[in-house]
Amino acid sequence: MIRIILIGYMGAGKTTVGKELAAALGVTFYDLDWYITMRYHRSVPEIFAERGEEGFRELERRMLHEVAEFENVVVSCGGGTPCFFDNIDYMNSLADTIYLQATPEVLAMHLKMGKGKRPLLEGKTPEELESYIQEMLQTREPFYQKAKYTLDVSLLDSASKIQESVKLIRDMLNV
Ligand code: S3P
Image 1 (cartoon, protein in one colour):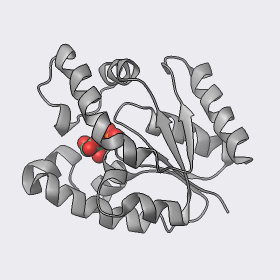
Image 2 (cartoon, helix red, strand yellow; image 1 turned 90 degrees about the vertical axis):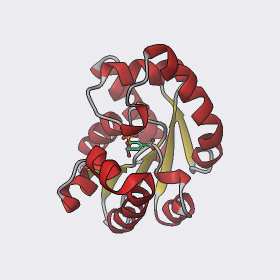
Image 3 (cartoon, helix red, strand yellow; image 1 turned 60 degrees about the vertical axis):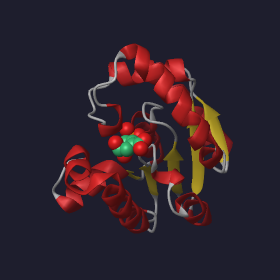
Image 4 (cartoon, protein in one colour; image 1 turned 90 degrees about the horizontal axis):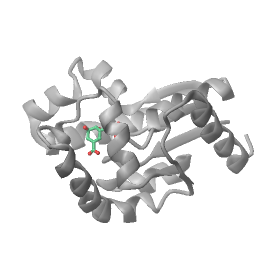
């Protein structure tokens, strides 16, 4: 049975790599933010606006408990998921957890390339973004480091680089 959970900061490539990994393994892919949106009929920014971050974290935890029970899945979490409650220990108890680790420079580049709306990054200038990431990583890193595996990701700006990460994960997990 395959159950892999990808964690890491916003812009690490969790969704991009997760989708391709699931396809390669022939299992179902779930993105936790999408799952939340589907279950609550609200986008993540809408949930933040309506319930605040605290309310979002409660929902996120509840939805994690649904998704992490599924079998034969690859799940990509939100950047904050492992950093609240006992979420990371819970994930470790059920799944192969992988931390997609990247430098603040790479994260900032991915975030600029992407179109996703992220309430925590709203209104940040490109200069502010990198230092904000750096600061936030200091508090988040201890949680990310609890993953069973770590994969260093550099700039994922081509299909072949994404496939390379998929291969490294498959080799690491022997799947
Ligand atoms: C968040 C990351 C987002 C999303 C929310 C909060 C975070 O997910 O869950 O905006 O706290 O890092 P991505 O990592 O997929 O952007």
